Length: 456
Image (cartoon, rainbow, N blue to C red; front, top):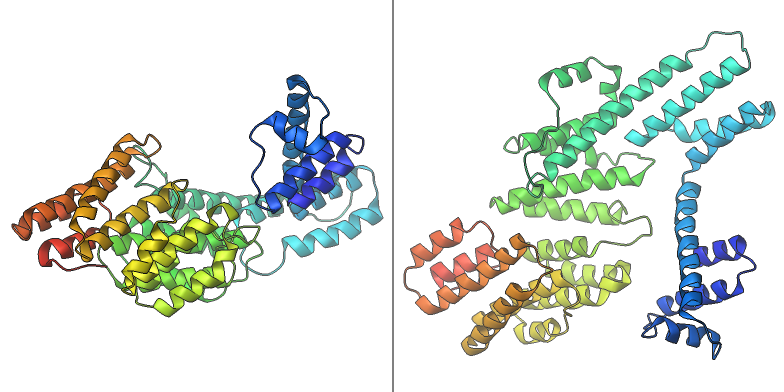
């Protein structure tokens, strides 16, 4: 992408040698993972030597490069939409009466739009646009034969509407625990009845979204999840991998909620979904990168299943597919988790010390893991000091949301109570742990409160 940007810049602004030289240096520094000079004038001196630039000139050049970068992102997005480009070509060929060009492009766009496999909402929208364009071409050229393009446009629009509405409803239900206030997905019994009577109801993507919707709306009826898993297991042919990415993530999130309810069989289900999604590149982004949170979840689930060899292989195999800015912290944190689970606590501690403050999520996880190590190795003095420092950090850090802050502060408070009571009132502590809604590492705390034993 960075090289594409430079290529775009050279063709868009061939006479702006200053801007091109500046952008080239930026890309080189990023590619080599080197630090930028401390300020703008220092950066300009590095690029252009002792040439003097005023603050106004510097800001002008950088502003111009920023605008070119925004144009590049927009151009790149449009260029990647082959069907969108083809539809616009068809429109122009029709209006210019370039029949030969129209017929050739029409064949190409039909191959893309009507290929076999599951289609997502956006494919139905493009089909609607295609049929409307065909109808416009039919009228403009006064073609004297029966035409059903308007009917086909109407059918495709229905499919788009039902699929998109269900997709949004699923997202609302999936996020309802983090959205403020009540949600209203507006999927009523009458709406579902209307869908069943529509020809669109037979579309595979609508059946998939409908299954997800029912699983999220009625989470205790686990049969919907198993149906969704079976649908994914058929290795659906999907032109747009983002559909499978989204569907797989819905299934994983369902498993996560079941795991939090104590249903441990869903640990293996979530791990299997992650494996399939990553191996088939469904869960990778458009540049082939893996989310650091997905990376960490795979390691955590593997460790809970005691698949230590797989966890180590996964870290080694996929760390290079993490975004550069997350790679080092992700590696250090997850290796520490692996070493902790395989009872190599001293080595785990070494890796935890390498986790940087810059990544809050990994840092918070590292502080909790270090507290567990101190407790399990009997380093009470170090643990008390660690909990005090961690508590102050949580209370003073303004970047942490209130819920996240409470989740980790409650961990510190309860672990302090366990140390203070030293085996007294285990039942009362157990109830307190159960009744604390925002709490990390609940099962571990429960084990050490009730039995004085380390927990996973």
